[in-house]
Length: 175
Image (cartoon, rainbow, N blue to C red; front, side, top):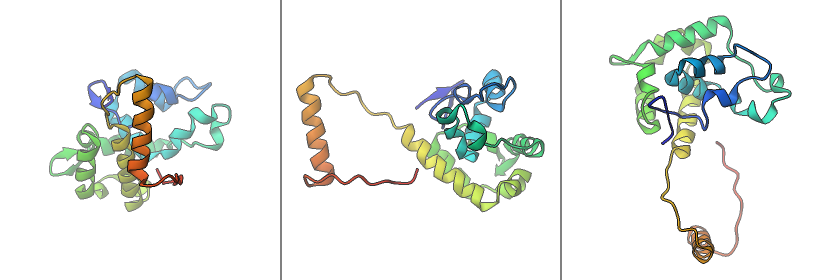
């Protein structure tokens, strides 16, 4: 698992990697400066277009739109709102993706203003989908031997065992 400030990080990178060019006080720089891992996790789950910023540094305006002032206030209020028993959304965002999925399914997100601003149940579905992605990104695999013959043989065995045939059909799956 990738940790940032002692908390599991759902995004592939820390917020400074996504910092907007030519802006001094973007939300990514502020989250990085204050080390707010829970806010970064919730932001990454709620704003999938964030992933496009590093790919489009020159024209990021056409791919990304940040929160309004009211949305930003509601976002931070939501982090401090109890949504499952006495657990806040921030405490849910501190756990591993699988645990967050379990808790978000039963969370009373409608207790937050941010829930309505982000589209209600569509927001929950978006976050759950991104958490499944985060879980896949956080899988740690044991290192393999680096000898050429073993790597090639392992690749061939893996390919045939997975597909069961010599044909490889690339399947495009949603994130």
